[in-house]
Amino acid sequence: MKDILVHLDDSDLCAHRIRTAISLATKHDAHVVGVALKIKSTIADYISEALPSGFQEAQRKAVELAANKAIETFTAAATAANISFETDIIEKSAAKAPGALAFYARHTDLTVLGQSNLEHNAASSFNTSLMDACLFESGRPIYLVPYVGKKIQPVKTAVIAWDGGAKSARAVNDAIPLLQDRKEIICLIINAEDRKGAHGHAPGADLKAHLARYGVDVKIECITVTDIGIDRAILNFLADSGADLLVMGAYGHSRLREKAFGGVTNNILMEMTAPVLMSN
Image (tube, rainbow, N blue to C red):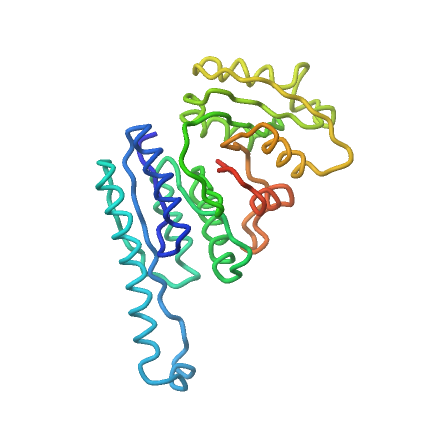
């Protein structure tokens, strides 16, 4: 891992994204690109004429101030950590900003984003559009940080949600740099009998052999669930194992941003309490 992108804003939640990006950069001797978004107003002229005098200018200044504050906060933290970094501000409309961020993501190894907080509807919808764009338009993995921020701690346990499919395989290979310093890696396979063709005769055995060549020792854990959904089974396993990272493929499509993620993926993104590395 040589470079990491982190999305910056002036929210309190951004501090944890910054700490996460810096921690990863320090561990992997990587360069960090901090990017803030300055959203341009798209208010039509006939509407702006009805607004109070100076409203749009005040709005523009507030947006600019927020972006500059985010950059300053990141710069101070990155400088203190003595890491290699750079910053930039994207000035686009709300509709075009996600695609612009995905452009940056396309040229880095990993993008650090924040989990959407459903208690803040507008921000949650915009964050989902950022996840959608970076995941489906960049060809690179994203690293989602829970909005319930936790203190950065020594790495312990990672869980791979493995279904034997192409998206899971992509996520695992993208995660190898993060798996190599884990003390414990568990390959979780749920209802393997339902996907015999994807798993072969011994579910997880081929993946275990593949990762062993990278120095990654994996424990295979096969479970069967009938009374709860796959998403709930994964979340329960994460809680029981005390895992601090989930690796999984993203299911869904980007046809509509608000419906970009499939059921299992969407539910995990809403209820995650540990970071999630996700690839498509």
